[in-house]
Image 1 (cartoon, rainbow, N blue to C red):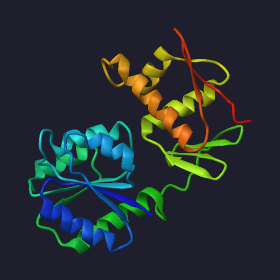
Image 2: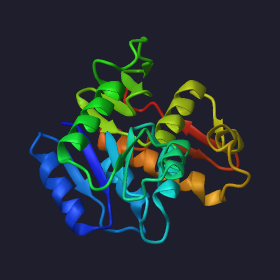
Image 3: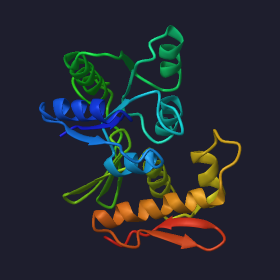
Length: 230
């Protein structure tokens, strides 16, 4: 079942979209905590996001840029701001489409279906999918999925990148500096705790598929994948 995330601060519009989209068999999540949008995004791991521009604290352009740091899922802006520059800004900040308010719900559904097909379905790229395998563990970078035996867990983009690098480096150590450079090379400065937080999330994802203590900390050096499941 495809998952749709709605980031809209008007509760009437958000509730209307939720009810309408859900009728068509999608799993829908409406953001209520606008201070922790990325935490909700990581937890729900949507296939598509409907995103308003005018939001509390930070605008939709900002949140779309944050999403793009972790995911390539389609983002459709829905906004009453219908000027040409608003639409250009939406696309230049990582959006895939733009719907003007007021909107007809059938138009919203048509655009959702179109983006889902382009990203995951019949119109998606037909290139061979990359699968990274290690002792029965399978990482699907394009799907952002990690699979072991019959268990599958969804990943954020950074989590998938870290796991891919750990697998490629195994049995060697993945150095902290190497990870920071490879994963955050587009940022001038990354807080030292950022990598620690992401490693913690990676460990939790391994635990969800039944692999405990998958990532070993090598003091003063970095991290190493522990192939303990063979």
